[in-house]
Length: 65
Image (cartoon, rainbow, N blue to C red; front, top):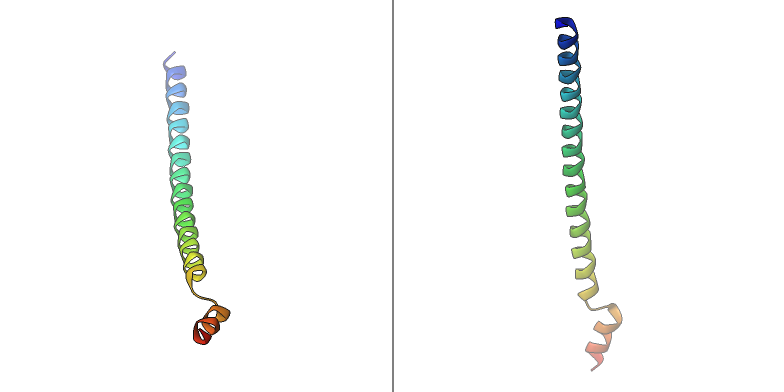
């Protein structure tokens, strides 16, 4: 009986370790997704800034008028 309880305790300990490793991996993935989100937001900001700049044609029209 004591041997069975010891085996069960060992299995639970191994499962706990695996869950801890999975939790760590998920936290790394979450960090990476957050970094990707930040980069996409920076790209979006840059694209919107480009969109606000007057085009070459608009500059010419402004000079003419």
